[in-house]
Image 1 (tube, one colour):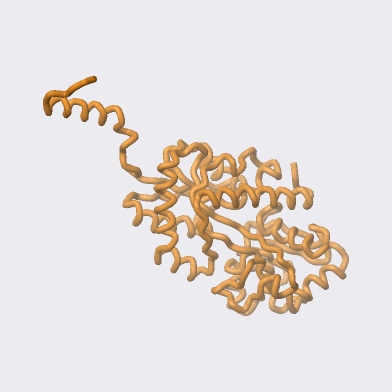
Image 2 (cartoon, helix red, strand yellow):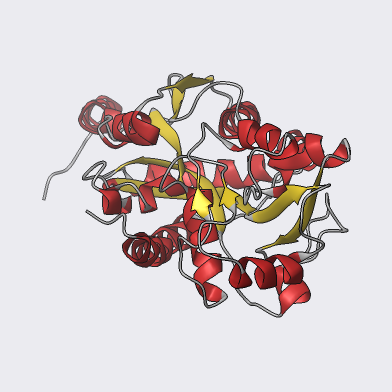
Amino acid sequence: MLKLHNKAGLASIAVLLTAIAGPALADYPEKPITIIVPWAAGGGTDATARTIGKALEEELGATVNVVNRTGGSGVVGHSAIARANPDGYTLGLVTGEINMMHWQGLTDLTYRDYTPIAQINYDYAGVQVAADGPFDDLEDLVKTVGEQPKGTYTASGTGQGGVWHLAFAGFLMDQGMEPDRVTWIPSQGAAPAMTELAAGGIDIVPSSVPEGRSMIEAGRANSLGIMAPERLDSFPDVPTVQEAIGSDYQIGEWRGIAGPKGMDPEIVATLEDALEAAYNSDTYQNFMAKQGFGTEWRNADDFGQLMADMDERFGKIVEQVGLAK
């Protein structure tokens, strides 16, 4: 048995152990963290990322930089997140598109290429129509669309195969109709689609209700229903589709913080705890409430399960719509 006879010997052992374990015992984070946003600056995803980033800075005591990596309908930014060093210093605000893009042959990336850390947002699809349009309520819309010839009505709110396109196609199938009974007009997002809706160029925008806020508040559009389990606090007059037509169909766009595959579980746990505190902060909650965005929390394990469940669900819709490759 090794015996140490003096304090100098103990000190030498302590120095040796510190040298061996130095990096492993280092406090995280020791340098700035980057959050990659796969969508353009100024949009809802970007604003959500910057707000949670600000709150996360306060919790971790470290700088959090948000950078936009756009292109390829979300492929460029999501690829940058997946291919980053899994050291915890490059994260991303991943979105539900990772449950759709690979089914359409746009990328090989799937949810399995990421380390889920926390879900912080979920915006359910709504059904927006022009205030002076042909539909009185959601029941009337379903009845009228079902009675008129295929292609009579048009809808928009995202690109072909985007979340609002697939959400609405799934809604039509839920109501016993073909997924393409309403012709989809690709757009650069819900904002230009709502402008076109108010001008009479299209008939339906199945985006989140907050994305239609300006037109709704201006009296130029109405939201007939939301595909959510309950009404939104920010839009209490908009019924759920269950209330409006007795359907339990629920779907929308999720957003969450994730990193590349293979992150250290201890770093993930640190980030998860800090993100939960940031999520519950006044900084984040007040901003989301003001914008009307949905707040929904899932920890790392539950977020990973959501990704898996939604991947299977959107895969079926993509196939039924005829966009699978």
